[in-house]
Length: 454
Figure 1 (cartoon, rainbow, N blue to C red):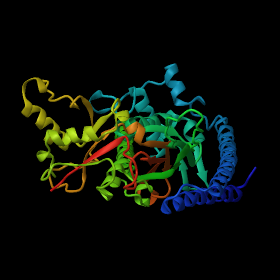
Figure 2: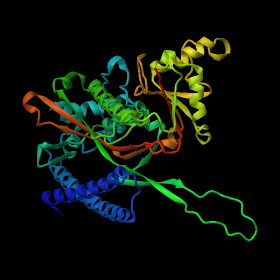
Figure 3: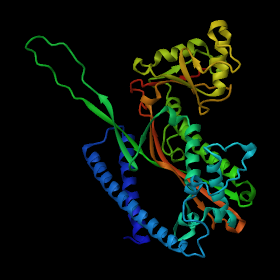
Figure 4: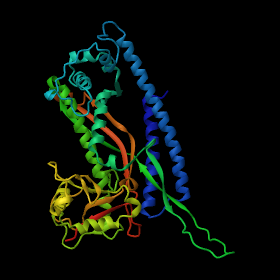
């Protein structure tokens, strides 16, 4: 059993190894070379140590939680402290011994929650934990106290949130985020994960009789995912919890979800490769950096606005996409771009080119699905040398590494002087657009981009 100082030292040791792995990979990328055998041996050795340390840390933290939980359970066992039966609120709701009075706007269940009961449970927890409402604390019972997870003081640590609230944030994030639905999502059991990728293979050839067949090396590359932490802190006035806790639970869940979804999509398309975007280089950024890259399709001269794009520009984009990527290919464009180019061209064609429905043109163009993402240009200004539309099979092009689910923590003391509460949300992920060319000598990938020309 470790004390707090030893646990902190173990985490720092693991973080140093992770940083070292990142430096090895980054150095190889900067020198435009593959990892050497020595590099790979060091990475593999470090990864084994990182996994072992992570296991130790997780076991120690689980033990710490259990000891604190046992202490709280012992406290709750005292008759004077045990206000309600020692059961989680979800169980008590199922047993029907708690009457729920939903106060959601218009009687509708807030986004992210399946039932009024879930929203009510999350709202009661917020009132109890954040606003200190005694009636809500009585409703939640000892379950509020047993979820304490502090390190030293509450100002430094905080409280875990109920499952209903955390699940609502995750559900909404997945529905808002475009990247998670379009890319290949892979779980990450540790902070660094190497994914094998086809490199090169020798060509086949005809050989005369009694002629030796020349040998050739089949090479495999790798995609390295390095989890980066994305965080968000919201500070809320405690007065909001007094009368609107249920609606506030839905609002906060949606707010956190939108923030994470927007940043994930921004990194996927427009990431600048710096720490601001988690060292992620977006597809559009890679194409914009050099219009001579394979996969960059230049629009006809003078076509640098969506309203100027012609059917021939889109045809050239489809023609440039490799055949192996066409079966699951899609167009990626902003809603503004879709309306001003694709939809306008379809309506201009008239008759059988448009489904005359009140909702407008279905999001398909030239026989391919259209995915809307406003991380691509959203106005009719000059986009000279900038990527306006993407087309191809995104699952073959991009890996989304998901390290863990969203973690939420509440800080009650840090902002107590102003009668406010802070709520921190974090997640860890990485995005690698491994199929997008990063050099003018790279082969064309499974996704191509249409660039405007003035």
